[in-house]
Amino acid sequence: MLPADPSLTHRAERIGYVLKVYPRFSETFVVTEILAREAAGEDLAIFALRPTSDARFHPEISRVQAPVTHLPKPAKLSDAWTALRLAQQEVPGLADRLPGILPVLTRLEPAEAIQGINLAVSATREGITHLHAHFASLAARVSRVASALTGIPYSVTTHAKDLFHEDVDHELLQDVLTHADHVVAISKFNQDHLVTTFPELADRVVLIHNGLDLARFRYAEPQPVTGPLKVAAVGRLVEKKGFTHLIDAARVITKRAAGGTAGAPSVEVRIAGDGELRAELAAEITAAGLGDVVELIGPRSQDEVRELLTWADVMVAPCVVGADGNADGLPTVLLEAMAMGVPVIGTDVTGIPEAVRGTGPRPTGILLSADQLAAGDGRALVEALTAVAADDFPRVAISRAARDLIESDFNTATQSRLLADHQRQCVRLAS
Image (cartoon, rainbow, N blue to C red):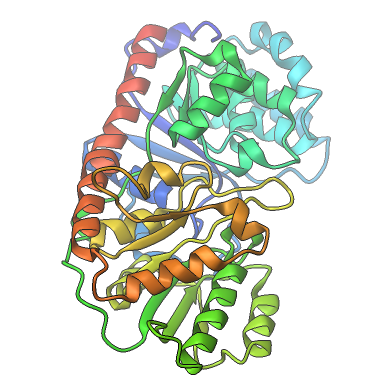
């Protein structure tokens, strides 16, 4: 970590969240975390690097009090000189710090480098004492530059695409993580991956799960299945979510039920979300003759997702590792279903087994092999859905165990306090 700017001493703590896009419909975990920290009395500010393209927003966003600074993406390289002139006027000690970051600046896209300089100016103006980036990609790289120019320490919460996607520049990622005060892993899987890949980070990677506002996800005892098994799935319509495997399982089960196979339930599936595979999945549903069985209901707000989970007998997250290496970290909606008492079916992708425990003294759900699903073998998913529909499925015991786990390990009040404690310690040490 670089030496702190002496002007940070005695300054009131103020945390600057650095986000690629804000607000973003799919990143409810960020809003939940910010709201929890504001509820705890923290002073926050938000810096967004790209304009949002979402047409819908969760109502919770209106409760965020932190001011939002949108740092426009520079249109031309000459904007760098304007940014540097401004930074020279406003960032103390810039001339001494600039040479140290030049090797990194020359590796970045020009827009990223310029936004790093502009973030340095904005963070100085706003009296920020610590920068926190979500995702170890654009937001973290820009934070790295701003930190180097100002002496304001930074931290990074890593997720999945920023670590596992085939496009990740590992040398640049190592630089960004190495210079962070601490690196947050959202799962033990990610923590182990980071420490194995970058051993020098061993004493600075901390495990802090994404959490839920449990007051908004109240537990209700699951009821026996009556009528068709109501199946909910939520997420962006992209390869790693594995929805094609759920559609195929619905096809198999529906065929079994129509054929009079003993114990085969009828099913009704609702998939919420939008994404690049929407047309492809819709065509698959039509081709399988499942128009009255599987419905793509489009993106849903958090309130609407709660309604969907209240309707459902089971929540399914058939996640797989995409051909590009991209994989889910731990879908928030799985945690929401577990908090509400909805039985869940997940796969053993990255951090999911840390929440969905299929074995042990108190299973919290059904856990399937992602590799088996990705290979086109959906038998385990078919059998899991059939088991959940059966009268003897221990839905109450599993749901209570799941709720207990969420309360102990995924409560945002606890997780955000852990994050705040690390950042306060960082600021105090820097001072």
